[in-house]
Length: 255
Image 1 (spheres, rainbow, N blue to C red):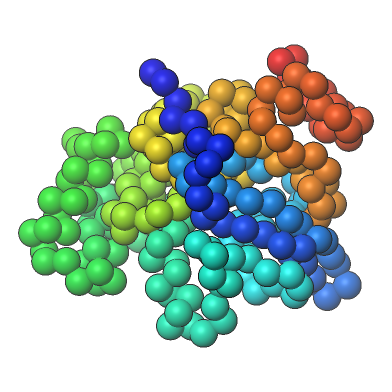
Image 2 (spheres, helix red, strand yellow):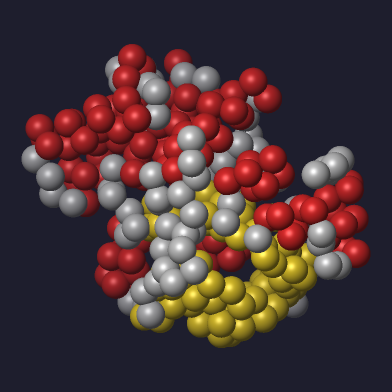
């Protein structure tokens, strides 16, 4: 299967200019600048606590920035709550711990967004949910509650729920970190299929094989800064900084 690679002339969807984020005296992000183009898969890698997830949360306005700016389709992220909600409708976000409603079935979790936020009819919302559960390989689990699903299945429901809003960008915050090893692959396969379909994606991950094979662009974080970025071949085969080499070596990456 051919991976959909963003053309060099693709439009810029997200632009980060000298983004800074503080938590008291702790500097979580210091001067982060990067771009994400349409249909591009960008993987953020680096040690835990280096700012990757913070940048993702700032992208979706779950956190406010303390300096610089983030532009979405050329427009600075708004601060007004109503405007922020509209932006979030255009960005799907998948968290580490699924965040499903435990008292609702898989299909009910997926239906909620199109029905309550987008105002789709019950029939249209259900049709969309059924199609998306089929897309993530869970058509037979539609009536199951989260407690009766494996971690990998719950995460695939969470992906279907995000896709139900028909987002322009998908944000993944270490989507496999809470999964058992045997279920990681099923989630990564769904994410790869999205990449193949041309979905614009930003993925915070420790899955280096996924980043190497699926990403168009890899960004390496260290202590709130970008220390290196480029195509995966460069990052994994010829990193330019000693810190990147040390990080990949610590993970046992051998190229």
